[in-house]
Image 1 (cartoon, one colour):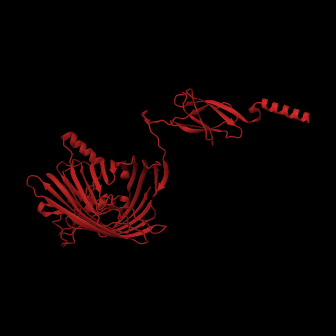
Image 2 (tube, helix red, strand yellow):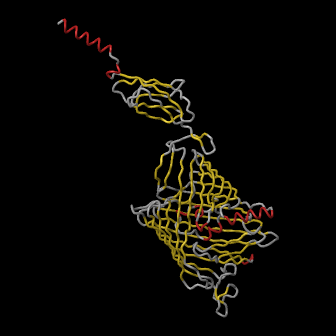
Image 3 (cartoon, one colour):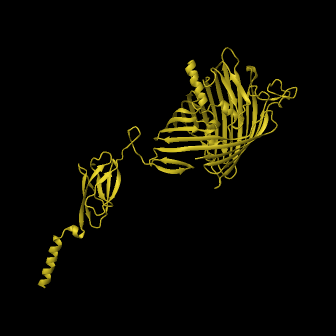
Length: 527
């Protein structure tokens, strides 16, 4: 019995005298933590075994000491507010030195910048990068429209068929904070680069202020992005008598049932040729740029997801711009397509202009899959030296229906229609019709720019958020004054020969002028 007690006591003494590391109870890991920026020690780094609750911190020399119990994690974690989080495998080592990557980043100018993680996801067919707190969002907005057109009918003027890239747009857009937004938009169609939108905006609830190059808020059809148009081209009257993109500043306020916008605008800085003429006039003649004041009021008596009514009125006071001849205004337009480059309707340059005005009335309504819309626009040109003022006008009305359960959608913040919903998994089909009329003749002012009307039938296939196919059939009818500044035939003379002189046209009233039909198609992708 005494022998057994002696043996047990001897074994206990032996175990107590053996180092803990020899049988795996615990060991100590040490090391130094430095920064990748300058190699200096990093103080206050939280060091812990992965999964453990307790941690230690690096001292003033960047050194740490960590006891690693038997059976614990073999991974050390390193956390520091100014450096990236890191995990390191111990792998049986007694010393583990670590270099942490600084969280500081610098731009190309050597300035320290803040960092924020962003998540990437597809939204409505577009790639969007957004921070978790939604304070920052960035996305690209691309658009390619390929058009083709053929022309039919007995024509006085030969019109060539063709295919063209109507738009090749690349835009970068960013919501930089909760209140600040900016974008830049370029078009590379026709083998040239034209600046479209380039502005910064501040929003605070229903209030918005922006400055840069953007569309003046005037016409529903003009302000609607080309990706959501019902027809391939906007009606002629809105392309002439409603202002589009100009450099300027504007404020807008979206009430519950009202939208009010107003601004002051200057030159169009988008077209290369216009910019060069403006610069030449400024350099050679010291000519100041023209300006304009534009305002609009929209009233929405009722609006929900199923139905809505839009009523609007707009006005713009404008002085002649310096992108053409000085103190002159010209109204000219192509008919319903970019393929036909002929401009039958053309006032030529109206000289000695002091100012001119645009006025517009518009209305629209939708109910589920049905939509109607129309605008009436008037232009008055006022001249110096007691010359008679000139007045021109025009209008359009359109209607459309989505056939397979889709719904029209309206954006009250902009006062315009946006992308419709589709009723089927494969998309939806839209049928549409539009009648448009434009008159550029004022006999009292001695201006004979011609008049024309266009009836357009449309068929749109909305495949998904990104792809749309469009087919338009147009019946174009011009009067005898629509001779493109006496360069295009408008009828035949007494000898039966084509003539550009409207006074020599022998066709009876209502029969003169160029008439033709047009079939056009568009393949569009937005991404």
